[in-house]
Length: 399
Image (cartoon, rainbow, N blue to C red; front, side, top):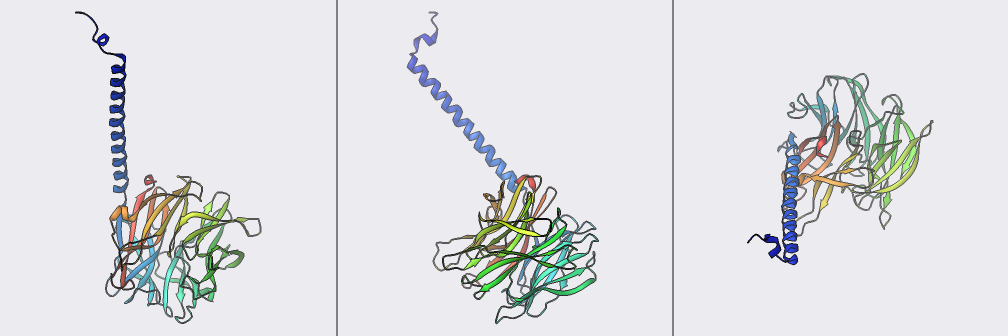
């Protein structure tokens, strides 16, 4: 019999066989695709390196609120808040620094940069001047009763061995919980900017507080400062509290954007533009980003043509008797408003029930450096904790 075997099979059977083969191919292809995605995700995570910068000890319970710059001699410099026997904001603190000669893989022994002034000194912001000198703007707690504070400034030699200009007060007698790493240089208009919050009413540290943000401007690299006249109102809750606190600035194409959070963690933005004589406020709007009770950081990346944000997100827990904690989210935006999460620190290191806080980001060429505090909190007392300063080092290809 020389008949073709296909002639013995009905058309319906052939159709079923074809569909089965197609379904098998799609199943195999999908699994291959999923496996490739899994491999890609693992490759991305493997490229993220975590480094300990300053671990907490019984004598030094808290290290956090870091700022990073590159010195003229090639070393990375990190300055951070160094707390003594206690770990609360009102405990004694100074500003310490470390340097790295291998792009953040290892760090030198700690050295004191600015000793404790009055009741506490922390929240450093660094800027390297054209002559290599290092400008440091920082926060000093003046009174615990009224939470009075000042924002001050000092200037150091390029090797940090000598003080060029003694500390002077930039913002006097208020409660101004600014963030670390808050100095921004406007390369287009050759001006240095520093946003800072101003408490309008309330105790300062609670939900029942109202803030606004102002901006200082310097056209001589921090030698003198002027009030820009800009006031960022931020967004209030139903009770009229919130506003704009812990503000920062990032580049936004033909303008700059001031970002801040309100008391409930909603991040707002306000565009500012240079009109030839000074900065003026433009559009004020909300961003689809949350940063709960901590400093966040946003930077524009030319190579990516977009923005990278690091921010702490509140994680709700369902376990009775436990407190909420924070995760560090790293997100990307192509328009500065809508954000896609890239990863969280929990995904990278499985930090469990502890807290990640006080995040900042430094981007240089194709490298990203993210500093944050890693808090080991006691289960029976959330205020009895230690904070270690950590670093995530990763390539831009992660994004």
